[in-house]
Image 1 (tube, rainbow over the protein chains, first blue to last red):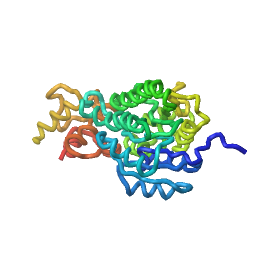
Image 2: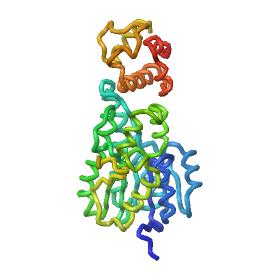
Image 3: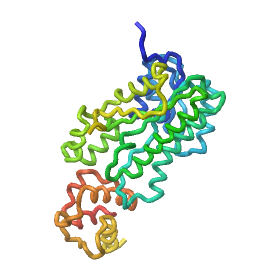
Image 4: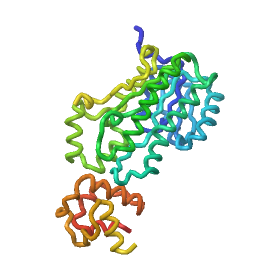
Length: 254
Length: 72
């Protein structure tokens, strides 16, 4: 029987692979045959994730996306060591809640450095000749916050909207190079971020109960997001580019 | 930072007029002390004092004096 999602021997770079959704993407993509290159700040964490992968031919690379000027060097080293890429997942991100009156420009910049500038710079670098194979597919991990307004999310939501907006432009610009790019927009997902959210508000709090009413399929598992990423990276999604796919347990239908 | 300066910082954080609060002010009596105000306190404590306030600590705040005690 043929599997629709087959990434056998596809070389996929995952930035932000040390925890949460990025970590699960690494595991899931390895299960469908990909050779993944794990990138994040902490090499010790990447080594732990590497142990969880299926198959062989995987690798790790220490990379701090906040240092956007260093991304080019990191990408060059990755290509030299592992070869041209068939795909990339950008899962590095910070989820901040800052009331408007405290949202100073430097706070917005801190969020944008990781959530947006790191993303566009990584995409820019891998889209250079010789660094990708024909048919390369890129997936950014966005958020439902990209299209929904919420208190205290000015910086975060703007950064995710910027990512999705950039994706629509890049999709058109890179189509002639046979490169497709999309994002997935998860709602609240069971990661360390959700643990911190519960710590802050409490499980029985009105805030959390309101969330569960709107996100009526419950809290997403990281697999739910990784499965959507695997699909968008696969040849089965060849006719899809420039979109943001909500993976949100129904949240955006409310 | 003196106690008066800390109270002024709380007033600024909660967007209250200067002189609104004293150490004895009961937070439940302050209309503006809602969930966003609590989040503002979390951000302020992190920015100004490098302290991470948890939900439990915030729930324990009954008076302005309780907040002052954390501002060290």
